[in-house]
Image (tube, rainbow, N blue to C red; front, side, top):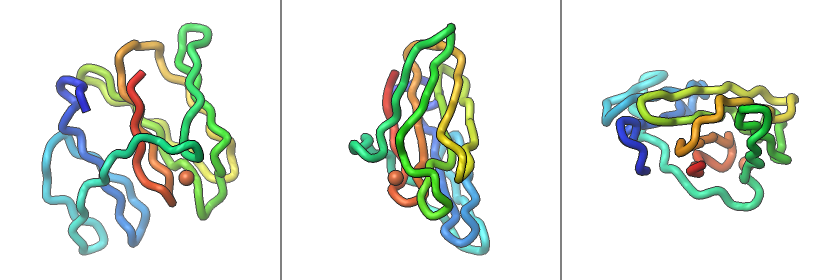
Length: 121
Ligand SMILES: [Fe+2]
């Protein structure tokens, strides 16, 4: 990660209840009585890749990824400078995210089966 103030952003997911948690630095995070370790970010494989376009002054993001309850992308986050935008996504709906067109940010997204992915844009 090379994104200024947000480079220590940490993401956690509770395996018991599915809750997603964020912290801006290392932290002792617990949920449902268990300590969580932060998710490792991966470069996307083909199945978990996003399609990212610049259109009408926005980043427009879609994906052919599955969106079933057992396997879907549950959020997309955009980190840029001192700002993080988080867009929750829901199963049974196609992935469809519009973000302000800010260059030099980092996209992060979480697949409930395959983990946390990142891409600089
Ligand atoms: Fe996936």
